[in-house]
Length: 277
Image 1 (cartoon, rainbow, N blue to C red):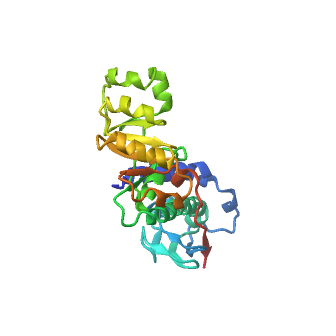
Image 2: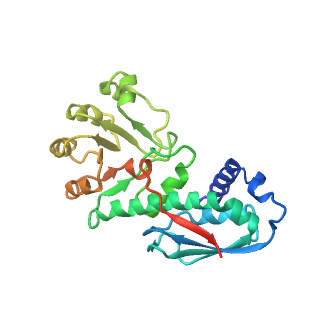
Image 3: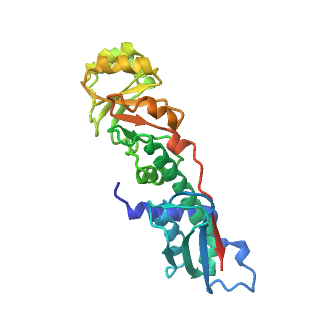
């Protein structure tokens, strides 16, 4: 995934304005010199994978262009509990007003990358790829998908604009899966994918020449039957897993993808602390 610097700048700008950094009432006391240079350090309170360092830096640089951050752990690398992750030198205004925004990005994104890496470890030695989903926090999809990618997960479509994915409600709106073969789509985007909830839908779905069939919440036995019915006519994605340990049941099957909403929907942020020296 190629980083888009403008997206980072705009996302941090929104977050800083949401926090009201320009009217930080705590800094309006007469005895606080907001231009004074201070030093601080960021320490991890648990193990993890670092993600979001550019967002962290940007949170201070938008307030103080001369802010300097020295990283002791590089983006995408693992760290242990109580590790000094980064050292900061910036104005007191930048550190005090940007701290929460910077840490919010770092803890959220590191939590996602750490989880993604953990899930990915269950597929070591397999050709099956893990996919993320659109089950993301509003306004933070770019950050969340970047973090899953950093943790070893393949990005699925970013939105409604880049591929066709027909799920159960689409099929109902179209009048049933039998009608799909008669629909002329203006654009297919990167791929055409159809969700399968029961085995009887597979043969009608294949008539539309899909790139991917998504086997959603099917039993392991039904997935094996579905694989035989699909017979290499398209790629196969499986969803509906609730625990990372469940991946082991599918590891040896001839499928191509496992998609996991859990990666970005249920987030355990990594705990960091930022302390002025």
